[in-house]
Amino acid sequence: GQRCMAISVAVFVGKAKEWIPLIAEAASKLKVGPGDAAETDVGPLISRPAQERVSALIQSGVDEGAQLLLDGRGPSVPKGYENGYFVGPTIFSKVKPGMQIYDNEIFGPVLSCIEVDSFDEAIKLCNANPFGNGTAVFTRSGAAARKYVDEIEAGQVGVNVPIPVPLPMFSFTGNKRSILGDLNFYGKAGVHFYTQWKTVTSAWRDDKYVEQLSTAGVGAS
Image (tube, rainbow, N blue to C red; front, side, top):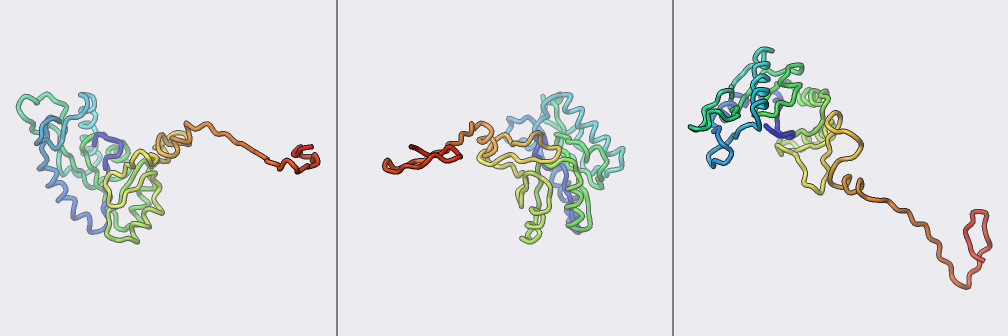
């Protein structure tokens, strides 16, 4: 969760909401610990203020009526690391727009789950968000995938890809409040930004050809 392209909000359509408890159960089995340990699934946050901010946002979710299925505050960690900046996997359900855990980028291992009745409602919900960095759809339907790609208002879209960050030869294409300016910082747009354009206009004439001077100033005598 400590990255801009992490999946921080998951929208479940129809019966897909039945997966939410299963996700919470699977997340509860992840091991929290130092990042250099092979058995660690979730490492520490970058600083104490980051840890405190994430913990405060978790509490705000509880206070604002979201259902806390898995609380990652105060996780069990290996001996000797008790003072580390750890927050364990945290899962919320019944999240709604307007809650701080939805409106803010948490930058921590927190997943906010929203339930909607229809695919159209899910797209409308996503497009109502003022940000548009990236999004992903998970489906076995090619028609649903095409509809999502065509209608969604986000710069980077994944189809059955959880973190749709392109390779450097493609542009990082956030939109709405997720980008400033009119160019992206790498890929083709980045090449264009650093390119000095030059326009050359040439006219070649046969030596035996004589053209009277035109009013446009093109020709030879």
